[in-house]
Image 1 (cartoon, helix red, strand yellow):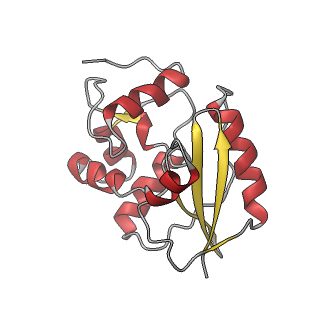
Image 2 (cartoon, rainbow, N blue to C red):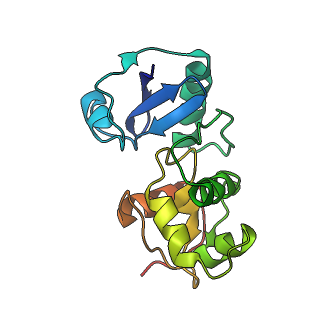
Image 3 (cartoon, rainbow, N blue to C red):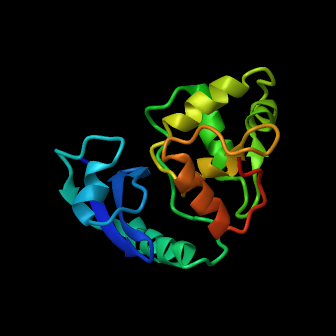
Length: 169
């Protein structure tokens, strides 16, 4: 059974959905807790509010991240429900360090599929746990901000928070 938690950050409320294996989904910050829950890429109708052991750690890390502190997230992510290719893309992306960007083609090459840059974008588009799996750190080949499920304004804001240099078009 899944559980969900709501956290307050400097940027707004964030909803997390948990499976027995870790973080299943995460929302972007929203103005209200209800908006955060409603914005999730998964159905939470059968989930109960709860705070599994990982919740306190994620709560603290989200607060610190959105306050501008440089950190790497430590919460386990549940990779279930993804194809092997999607999971490889997302696992690789989860390891891109704070303040660093890579191109879609770089990610494709790194996971052994050098001609799959467009497919990398597709995998990132279905990322259920943005910020923790930092798909905002993947940019176009020339450093331009392209293709972000949360909107390019949000991608820009996250990269600005991390003091990343990119091509702003």
